[in-house]
Length: 599
Image 1: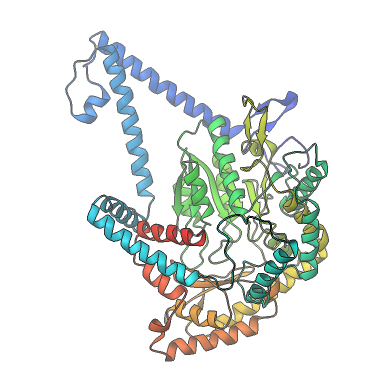
Image 2 (image 1 turned 60 degrees about the horizontal axis):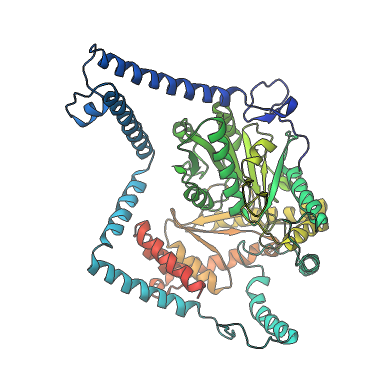
């Protein structure tokens, strides 16, 4: 998918290339910084090898003292000959380079991160003491029991084994329709922040019908369902058309969601850098405001994640900090458009130019904004540059299951060219079951999601997206203006689109969130700093006055009610407790929470 196989990666008058592209005859050429990066690494390695051998020869000829680098590092004595000196130098170099890399990475950590890492490590070590481990286990079991009680659903039939005799279709549908009737009021009132990106009952009915037609279809078998191949390609091309800008070679893949899109983009940059730059200790740079999916991706692929702070007050990625964090091991810089917590768009144009100069990839996480920002831009709203028009941007992720109004489990990851996209693929030509290859993490995939996503995009159309985006932007603007007028709370940053975050220097914002939840608002509680946000979706359009009225009541209640802490439920006590704990025990509690949801 995507138009054209050659990548020039430049606009009029530009001569630099960032990533490889198929040239004449199908050979892969890598220009400028990549080639130079590989050459520099090769020259350095050759020079080091020559120096080690020269030192060994000099010792063997008794023209140098028989002292290796390992001897010096360990303050040891040595009378080794040629091979002993060579081995000692190699081991010493490995130790020295690892130490330098470790010291550099520690120097880039914040004091808070270092404290948290040490506290988490101490917590892990304390679990080796039986008495402590027993006590912690008791507390965790109690926490899990409390979670189970709070999450216990009422009126749900539980099945712990497959029924001996199958249930009738009428009974099954009656059961599910009963569940739906109970839960629909929770989200149909438009008071859910994000989570529900509803395109209307008629639209959802269309998606259900389209998905039903492809309920047994699998894109893995293109010979059986050739139409799915076309539908999938169409979704990728339509999505790419929104953000390609001046780049005509954008291509991509259909994925199961934003997390998989980010995982694949991270893998692609890692593999590409390993192949063409010889990077063996990859690093990714991301802001503290980046989505946790990049943490998951780096953990999966053993990539060191270098976190940089946002600019205080604006909550945008700090460009100067990014510049300091770049090293020869950097394979990708992760940016957000917008970020989840505060709704700010990182200075992508500036970061992309820096990355371009260093031959580093830039991923733009537009999972949240991908189907809002392009339309807001067309409508004349002021949106910072975020797409492939920036020559340093090499990949993007856009969720069709959010503002694309498709069913859950659909997203698109885009690349500047096919050469980079190929690095996300998995191929295994030696498998006994035949030649095996997949574009994404999954092998078999649900064709129903592809069909429903295609139906969503072509049904809404450009006019529909523009109309919905205009309503969303007007609602977000009304919320921002109203929040700025409320005493005791403040707007965090100046978000340009649909996410509005607020905090307070006077009151506990989680108590305010708790009050609002009792008014039917389902908001996102945030931390560092303590805050809450609204992500305006289509069902929320027109409800700005309702929210601002309830917010005023919440502020007044927290202001006048001295027992707010004792009466608080939901986010208030949870974030109040975890804010003082290191990551280790909090991770264990989160693990018990997941256990509870699956039990």
